[in-house]
Amino acid sequence: MPATTTRPAALADRVAATDWAALTGELDALGCALTPQLLTPADCRALSGLYDEPGHFRSTVDMARHRFGSGRYRYFADPLPEPVQVLREAFYPYLLRIARDWAARLGRPAPWPDTLADWLALCHEAGQSKSAQILLRYGPGDWNALHRDLFGELVFPLQVVIGLDEQGTDYTGGEFLLVEQRPRAQSRGTSTVLPQGRGLVFTTRDRPVRSARGWSAGPVRHGVSAVRSGRRHSLGLVFHDA
Ligand SMILES: O=C(O)CCC(=O)C(=O)O
Ligand SMILES: [Fe+2]
Image (cartoon, rainbow, N blue to C red; front, top):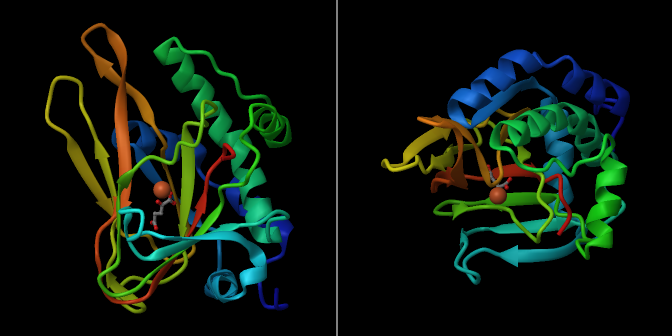
């Protein structure tokens, strides 16, 4: 990384300085919530530039070929680039509190240990041993079909995507989409423009929604609307392995 990028410790501090109470409230209301600025434009350029350095990745997915939409994403190989590793570790304890609270509401087990390292060890024992951190690149006409990032039995219920380009300047279109199935009702869609350098925390599989008899699990899927022009990059952080 060039010297102009943020030091890892400062990245972790920004995650810690997030107003987690406010973020949690928004997540409860909408199923997704933005963090403050985590990455500078220089950090974002350094990360999106990695896309063209194949040595950082274990595989590349052509989304059209799998009917996932259109565009490409690449799975980072281990060891992860330092900012990716630092952000993932920094988010985990905060997301863990939310995950445990949701599990309690839903009367489900909360199998997640206190540290990311211990949780990943459990994933590896269960055969989910590959990191699922991705760098995505969308050009004009590219989009991401509504989906859930589930790779096996072990699931962490929250994930984060970080915008690496500025909508309106670097690209148009390309809104992040979230669709929530409501129990015995029609679905609700929420679109979010990902500001450059900010993260969006969202539900990976389902989340507790109020029902007549307490809480029930509302299934959630996410995707990205078509990019109309320019190029959009994003960094996807998932907290279970694949
Ligand atoms: O590019 C995006 O905004 C979403 C990418 C995605 O599907 C993910 O991060 O899991
Ligand atoms: Fe995804």
